[in-house]
Length: 360
Length: 249
Image (cartoon, rainbow over all chains, first blue to last red; front, side, top):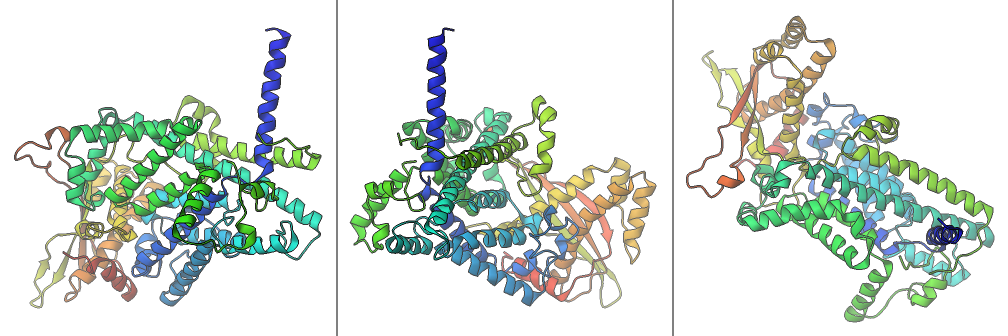
């Protein structure tokens, strides 16, 4: 290898590393996607709590002694013990309503930096107090929300975003500490917040990729996934056929069964690779969204589907969301955002990181 | 591309720390979630402690092969009739009622998972017993000392203390459900004993789905012995009735 080749390689690597470092420090990325995660997780949690309200005592309360031989709080210790041991009827109802209120505040993005960890603690405490009724949606929610506790998930469509925009208009610069601290300290905190936010997004993205790749690898080992019939079987089981006529219709055609079976394996296995180019990224994201919409509808797993679909949204660029948002605003009414939030792409790019948009 | 700014030392240190933490966690997640390989066995061990319980996860969703059997839980009770005659109820398929909660439901309550999870939990514990020990579980152990009698019999059949405790925890969970069911399903009698059964039934294979007259394979039952009903509080009966009763076909 010649010295010029070495120099070329070194320059290329240096340029890429520098681009990567700039990516994690210059602006907060996936601000729309992470905000959509907050909305989807929040709405999902609120609906979940409403749906299970009537059965709360048998699932998590003093009527749930049937689960007590199974495990001690799913192996989770403090601080995830708020619901452990089966609360009394009134106590459970009060705790349940507290979680409901926190979920509502989390959804609308009210003081999210406090509501997100509160949501994480209460939600995990509730679900892990009965591990016998848990499923993979609990893992997705718990793990992703942990990462997003370090991210700015209230940058868009939230009360926090409105408050920040007003502060920006007042002070002319981001004030993550509010009235406290000097401008320099606020600037440092904002920069650190950007770095942590972007690493949280990267970690969440990596987690989602590993979910898909692991799922794809496990499926690739199975004979029924290899012979193109796998999706037929779950839909024959009583608890995975919420709409029997629809389920039977879906699996009545051999070509359809084989196509959906292979599609599920390929889209999961190659998901990270498909993200690398814009065209294939669209195929990957639309593909996994469609797959999980199908699982939610055809197999009666709406919360599992909603939570993983929400996670998929962080792979959609901010510019794409911004374009969609603008089109919706133009079509459905005038812009009521405060001045600081109604800035155009140029203004966003020059704003400080706390409110900066992303070219993701 | 965005212009590269000059980075102060504190920013570089922060980036290195963030990269190290995120990198360690991602590598741990990879080894924990991916299918087992020789490399996993060699280097994946240290990450397991980091992952459990908070980052515990399994993505064998319908894989390697999807489940092809329905899992069901059955219960029946024995009671003394007003004439003093010992009477048995018919078997009741608890799973059918819980599965009904899923049917035509866009947003099903989480209760539907109860029989499926309990079936898996108990079946796993039962499989850890030898044939001789399983025969002990299939025998009747009634009366106030029934639980201790079952424990002694399992130990006598060669099971270790931890295996017996593990099995009895699983059986207790199953019989808690059955006892709640017995009190609610037959409210006019006081059950003197409860018997549980689990069953599995395969589905018609894909290749035979259009075959005229094809039937699902016969249902296979695992009948456990009679046990004294476990204590059931008013709250438990009310909770079961609420979760179960609204869906009785």
